[in-house]
Length: 323
Image 1 (cartoon, rainbow, N blue to C red):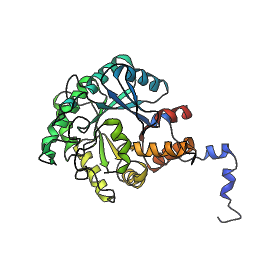
Image 2: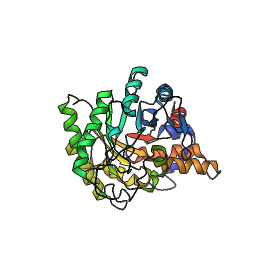
Image 3: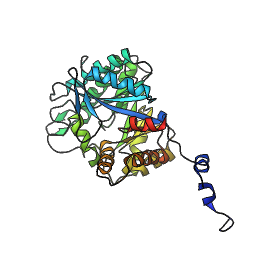
Image 4: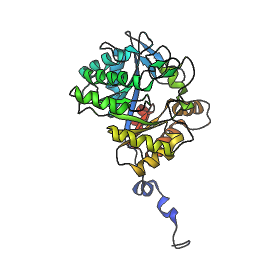
């Protein structure tokens, strides 16, 4: 059919027409809210580059999680800021570590919300890298044992799902084996499968206090120009036992989300990272765009690209609009 017989605008004429034929739906069920937990009591430190986000002590964290649950969001993701850091990042797997304490308290005080824990070492090491060092290089294989111990400590505390983000080769296999051997075969793994070495993590590094003290993370995080490599990385994680695969960041890598959706049938998570959040907040503050509309358009684009799950600092604001 051609004009004038076919007029696509007929079905855009009113909001009800647009609603009726809308191809992509965004729901509060799609959202995961990331949170930062630190030691102490009564702590709620604003993160200057991420308006509306805070480093919170466990007492304030629990109150925030209750609000998040009441908004209908099904899951949170926890990042820990320890009291002290060392060469190996031992606070990551300590029984009384900040994440372990937070998970236990949340599971005790807030019913029916999924607690996902980030499994990495960058917040816990005094050098800021995501693994154990051999000189100035990250030792991949030595790091696997530490990541697996960390994941198990989270499961022992009550985490519903663990999310390894260090981008070490073999990390999913090592974690799956340790969880299974300890009787946690039902604890799923959300793998940061295609995690790029991105400038969009800048605000997060302030929030999590995990800036590398030398060098960068390009030797283990993915090179931004690469697409085929992402598919290989995802396939490897699936073979190793990942239950959910992730692409991070989301907006600059919508093509990767689309390729993953076309090639794999596992659930796909996309991390709408701190820089994506902060640039919209900054532009809204300056009056350069409508922040609320930009937020929703961005989230819909991630869903349209093929993501089932969106981890986003916009979760609480978006949930209010979606209820």
